[in-house]
Image 1 (tube, rainbow, N blue to C red):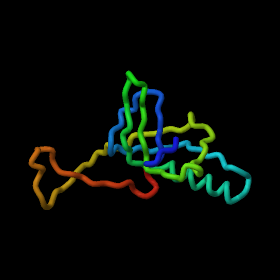
Image 2 (image 1 turned 180 degrees about the vertical axis):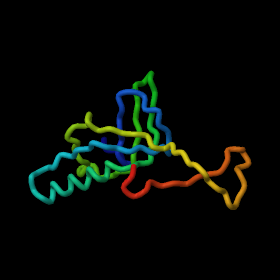
Image 3 (image 1 turned 45 degrees about the horizontal axis):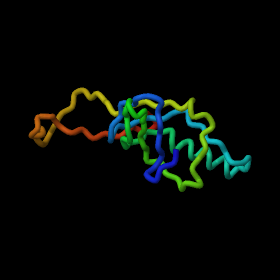
Image 4 (image 1 turned 30 degrees about the horizontal axis):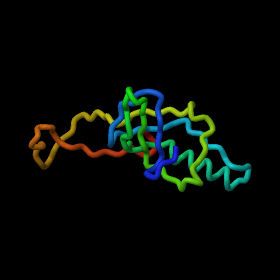
Length: 128
């Protein structure tokens, strides 16, 4: 649904996500408002905006209130917010966790809290 901060995603059950987690979204289908080529191309571009990796902003994940929401940074003006063809076909995958092998640290010291080193990463082109 539309939200001033981006797109709000509502789940039917607990999602287990927190601020800063990353998710990959697949299976998005946007309804084109008409059969005009411009509208169809816009709908396809909007689908691509959703079907990628997004950083999550936590909303709620609460059983007693049945509130299970996050937001992702995909924004449109409210009147231009797209209509999804089949929201139940949309899939998401958490991809915040990664494994690294044979890392060599050349400079620096581990954190004073004893958590090790910070690893910054980004997805490779064409891979989730």
